[in-house]
Length: 194
Image (cartoon, rainbow, N blue to C red; front, side):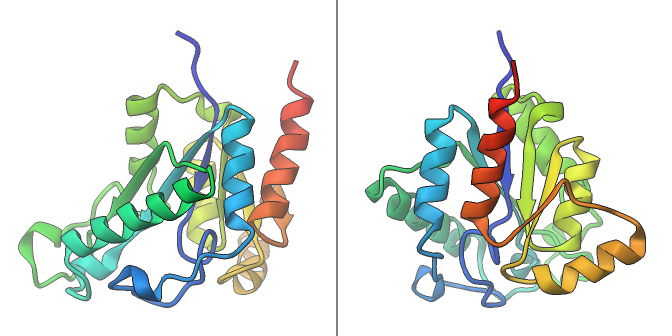
């Protein structure tokens, strides 16, 4: 079976505004262009997969049931605009958590590759020809760690991440103004693939 190419997406600061630790969908503000961006990923035959660090769960700021509810409502909001996600993976862990089951130094917290490896196994993904889009240093490092092309957005924490990456000598494959710009760049790259 042919492996699929994917666009891995950070959530907060990438698809929606980063408001800290949102504990209900009512505080989630989706960037208006995100609907078109995800639809374009879908139409190109690429997988759209959210990979999100959600240490708010481990920190006791949101219960996992509410996080799943946010994700269900996010899926519904995109479905209304004819766009869909092929998977949502999140890491609820926080190594100083007072809740034992969340207290661990896990392999799934970005920049560790755990969520990407799980998605690759679940969805048969060709990581070398996939992309990672996010606004934080950890997103770009995660991209490198899963062997996907990392794209830094200047939304969310992107402006702060750029000089930090330069200092570490790490270059994203592309620096995008926002998610739609990133997706348009990805589609240009896809045209070059024979």
